[in-house]
Amino acid sequence: MAVGNINELPESILLELFTHIPARQLLLRCRPVCSLWRDLIDLVTLWKRKCLREGFITEDWDQPVADWKIFYFLRSLHRNLLHNPCAEEGFEFWSLDVNGGDEWKVEDLSGDQRKEFPNDQVKKYFVTSYYTCLKSQVVDLKAEGYWEELMDTTRPDIEIKDWFAARPDCGSKYQLCVQLLSSAHAPLGTFQPDPATIQQKSDAKWREVCGQTTAGPGPSTDPLIRGQRLAQQPSGGPAARLGWWCACVSRRPPNTLTCGASQHCSLVSDSAKSFPDIS
Image (cartoon, rainbow, N blue to C red; front, side):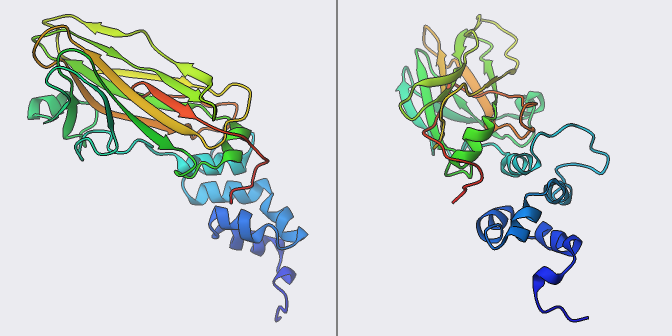
């Protein structure tokens, strides 16, 4: 039987069609069309199907999810937000805030070092010098796809991971701080582990730093990540080796989020409206 109006199709068929439409277009273009489309697009069933189709969940998924729509977006956006995290492009995207001693360098990861490193895709790393070396990077989360309402409504954790190692012939000091900041640069959440001091003649093994920062109350739109790595060594010669690191918004469902870490990382935000305004 011919169908003169798309809304005459069974709801199950409309849901299947919506499953194949990009999520942002669903919310921006399709949802405002009519009350039927709005109600279907707001169904948990649709967003569970989209999660299953994208491989975010499996058929036997049994973990609780507070909001499947938000869960879908957090999963789809999840990635390392830092640009040039392991020196493949030299110091592109990085600001060398303090460049003491013989200054920051980039070196190739040797064969033996690559075997020890936890990520076999990493081929280069940043190297500090004696005295203080500090570098930073700012990531605009809104430009990376995390619009204001998503961040303000869910307040997901920020996952951060970093790896560092000392030279075997000299000691060094490594520091990391992660902050979620408001648009006025007021801290909303902070992760700052104790500085790591490595003595001379250490095993020179790679060490992982990981942690999290969670937004406290208050608006947090237009979020940014500002990451800084600091390493110090009191006398001449190279000090610390800084390997691959990442900062990303948690992809886990709200209320069950966890986090990771980065090198002195700050997240900046602004003010909010109501989800799902993603324009």
